[in-house]
Length: 351
Image (cartoon, rainbow, N blue to C red; front, side, top):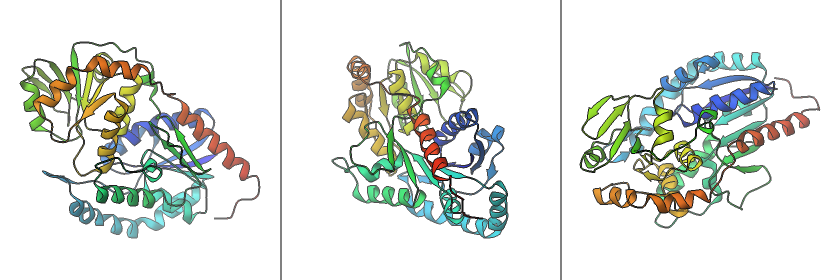
């Protein structure tokens, strides 16, 4: 099959997943055209020859995600598509896709409907449409996250939804799967070394200051900062990251879905520091305490970290009882594509 795969460029979780999934799709004989936006995503996917589009970025201030800034600063997307729609339409028409996959990328959703081709949505955000909000949820943030998810993935023929809990409530075209794990992570043989790995997508000086006063060794990955400051080593993402992840005794980090999935697979206790006012991060963080594999705090204190670090054995025991299938997402997607191909036995609509 010929597949257009649209990848969100906000954060890198969808990007690294796309590299893994596209590799598997190509192994199965599929031809894939990639759409993405943002410099980091575009550069990370460069080997796949992506087409650059524009997409939604989240903007933060000292209080957390700013809804006003996020809305107003993303208005620049509109002129881009007014100028480039004819070019993108012609490029997609020439590719003549059999199906579209959106990894939370809304232009791909629109294009699938314009070209009347089957659309597969693959993300973790759609889980929020099938669960009740946890106790204490900010309902405005919850409804906003649900609205964004409906817009980004509207009208998909199939939803492949990554989930730690796999809710029972769903429809026939919704397929809950364990989160996919990259092959590099699957190959690791984890140990419990002497350091704590810290992964932050946004700088957090207050958290760093707290760590300076704790008798532990921290290796911090944040904005490619490098250097040694007492018990804290700052590193840029590179070859050292996987060994540091493999051998850490625990993880502290912002609560993106992918790293939490890696921590469960590697059985590493996780302390979450969710980005404020970004509901997906809060939702993922709440899972850590509900499942018992870690803890979280939006306004982390020294006492919070000491309590977490003192309770690692309990978290490890809970993690030992949880096993996820790292290939279930890929296998389910391949099954969905096989269904689509079978349904396309009749003549497709002309472009």
